[in-house]
Image (cartoon, rainbow, N blue to C red; front, side, top):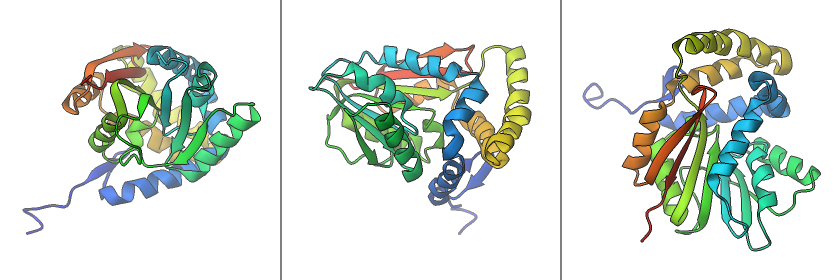
Length: 253
């Protein structure tokens, strides 16, 4: 019977694991890197991640009165860029499934003098909000860590207002073959060693490299958006496809 009906599996990097175990494994990874998370992002990307996030914010077309939710918000970079664009009529919510990351992000934003936001610990697969709540939902460098991407996208679609927009900023597949080879060497040989030097966590950054390779490429993720019911699905490659920004809107009723 087990041979005919094998238990479903999901990936954790290159490992195949029971889906119920992934969130705990991802939690362990991020618990280990939270203290130096921002520093490692700057070192790994040579600071370019800040430009990628600004581009994503511009593509969101957020308005002063928007209701905005950032999923897997980590240390608050997206809310840092979005919140100042909102008036008293708008709302920004920083969220993450990982408590330590969420606290780090909340405290950083407060230290920067940003106070017009809320913070909440939630799972992107099961959003606890009413239907048609948000004008913009973003998830930056977090979707690849979600156990069931389809479930998360369906939940996001439900919580967006008709015409509301989803912005996904995520590592993707470089479009240049030579760059891809260099990027593979950098990802698997250099970044994990950097993680060991800065955070004594080489393992966490091996997972990072593997999780990027297991994530859907540009066209595959666009197809998944469409399968989940999003309209106007598109993507823009940045830095020759090392990252891509995917967008989709909820159909207007």
